[in-house]
Image 1 (cartoon, rainbow, N blue to C red):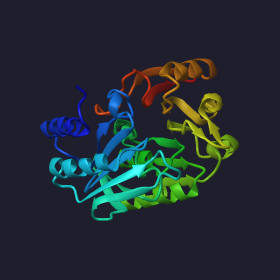
Image 2: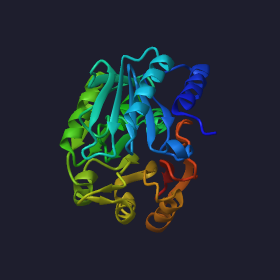
Image 3: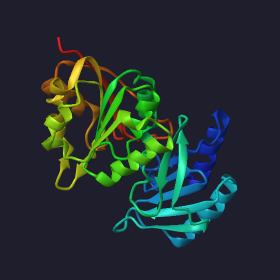
Image 4: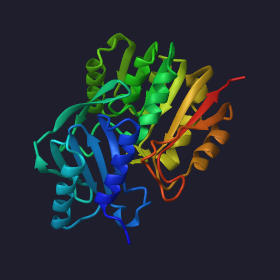
Length: 308
């Protein structure tokens, strides 16, 4: 007999409470990993005080109403239950119960981030990257950092908190970088240590180089972005430029989000395009991000760049 979403949520929340209890933001149920075939179209996230249900296919209204009553019981701290329909054009959202909260602040590893609900497809903080941000915070002391595909600059916030000397954020979306600037301000960080470049990475290597060489590079590209990025074709273009960007004995954090590409793809690209990068380890995803098939979820690989 298959378990209901309520049963899975109850198990997950009990496990969370046995550890550290609910934090400000975390995934409560990860259906998209296909470990629960009957619920592979559902994710449930907690952005205190909001529970966000994300749906990748249509469901019955009665089923949704059933989840609302169950979540209210399981998460008494909840003040709003919302749903985002990723299966529909423009990924619209609606409030199922409680307050209409569209903007809030959340905390992770002692740092704060602005979260936007109901307007954009993404909230502003990718929860599967939590361990990656923690690693960056713990490994940035005194370093000059290049943050490629910076989005809302969460890695940059973590790097400055970890003692980075400077961070250069690169993203085509000036709107996303503006939100990144607000994230730095939210954490009362020194703005003189942070730069923002709203440019196309593949056309702006000279702009990137002028701030280098870098002691840490973070690259977290989208798997596909119409007109600008197709990761299977384009990742090698970034990797082959590493010798122009990196200092000797520096760190490189390469991320891969595509479920269709394994970490072996990334390892092979690095071995061919930049053999000076020596693979060190893979940074594990948070435990809740269970995958039915290994390698389908987020891959975060740490390399050491040694020029000679």
